[in-house]
Amino acid sequence: MPTSPYRRLLAALETDWARQLEAARLAKHPETGLVASAMASGFLHAAALVVREFEGPHAAQEYAQRIVDGERQGAPPAV
Image 1: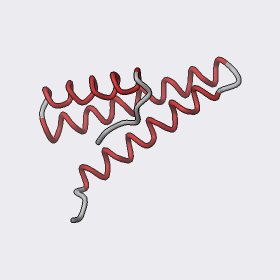
Image 2: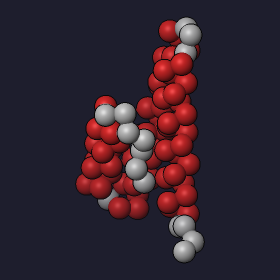
Image 3: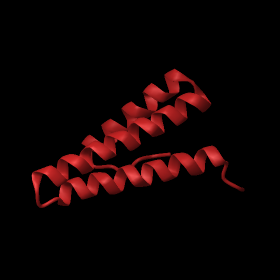
């Protein structure tokens, strides 16, 4: 079954989000970690905007909360 452009975009944003979080964790300098963390926040925000556009504001809020809760528990993002 082909993946929709929406799901591909969301997956790409989540991948970039996860990469930036990892870069923030591995940063050797505080400034580098701060930049990577800020970029991760931007990717999460963009993903939530995509969800809002396709599924509505309530779904976007739930999506963002799931991602944040999963991150607190060390889980990867769930599309």
